[in-house]
Length: 386
Image (cartoon, rainbow, N blue to C red):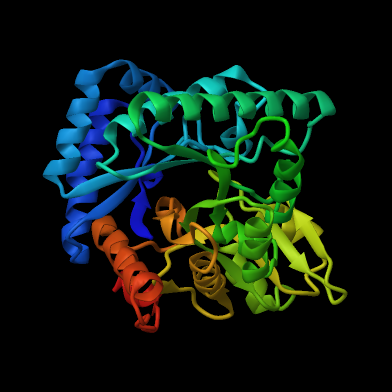
């Protein structure tokens, strides 16, 4: 696997802003992490993707800036369409969904840009939303989304025939969406392979925070993907919050500190009979869930930082998932993209973002890709701030 970090942590939506990200953050992060080469998982808002797809000169500017900073582009995050750093994002991140032609056009713009900027001999990946938010979602919506993804499959094949570059789309299951879990996306894709969704070009993005929130067995989820003849195209290396006793005052107080107004923080509770209760946001969970069993919260926490007890992070799910992906066909070809976009809303976040991202990437390189892994203890939030 090749390591990268996702630039959706940075709030730029135009070309000059993205170029500045590469100079001010990604390049210095690579140096600080001690990496000879670093991937970036670019987030390209729709308007910028359209501009880059139509302008060779603008793509050349991006290519030059990547090279000058020792960076490579292998993957694009095309989940958020725009406005990912608005004051309130919440459900807007799922719009437009896969019933809307704008989603198809945006995705194909990203594919064209990526095909032009990939290093020689490399394949590319694009992560995307799991069709849309679950409500409303009708049979007609399902048919339109299927038609759109059939079309994207064909266009990605045509792109390879035209450019010699392979770009694959990776559907990213997320709690609360139409395709909430790995099981959902596998069961949705399998019958549609016969309808024209091509598994050579459409696979799965395994976000390990989302996987943990669903209380899924990571190794079993990966085996299910491979057993269906699907690829894990991309792994988004991420960790969720875990609260073992959310009903205790200490647990409740600790998790309440992570309530914030920008992003959605879906929360799940595991019951004694093995079923999972759901709340669409952490603030709702604090009101609506019984808090009799452990909670997991969709809040991406830096991989190298351990939340203070009684909260922990689900890095064990990340480790198990990456190990399982290595053991399936094409697993070593998956892109490993660190996606901690929540630094700006993290309680007491370190002030030096370059140092924070660099330390997280160093941890990922040592813990997930080293042979054997180093297994160093994570630092606490308080240690990182000091």
